[in-house]
Length: 185
Image 1 (cartoon, rainbow, N blue to C red):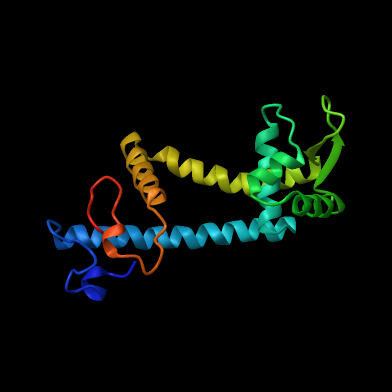
Image 2 (image 1 turned 135 degrees about the vertical axis):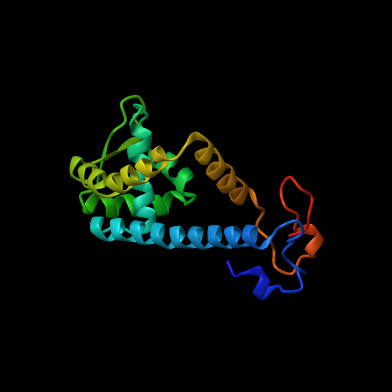
């Protein structure tokens, strides 16, 4: 985030009423930290994809199958297509590629003769645990060191950011309100 005192000196865009210089510094620092986290998260994901020789959608598919099958749910290509938001033929091509790469197996569905279940191979499961799993473990440890109040504040902040509507550029400023406070963005 650019410092609003510099890019919006007249306060036309960013409401700063009631905020002193220290509060603005904290907000700017928070957004700089969020940007650094976003870049670091992308770099971690890219490193895991490179290590596992997968593209982003392939990695999302592997994570979905791993997470969904943990509770005994049988994953099908239809479920995977819905989760990824892709067509049946696209998921078939992806599964063909993942199977050739030794990442998944297609097995007979135990209750539906017309369907196949998707299973992650043990090698890919171990590789995912050793790469992505280690990253998750390190992030979990950071959250565990925070107080309950800090975790709730961080969660509230991230949830409110995630709830912001996507702005269609060119729409009137009045249509771009913030959740919960009625002010224009």
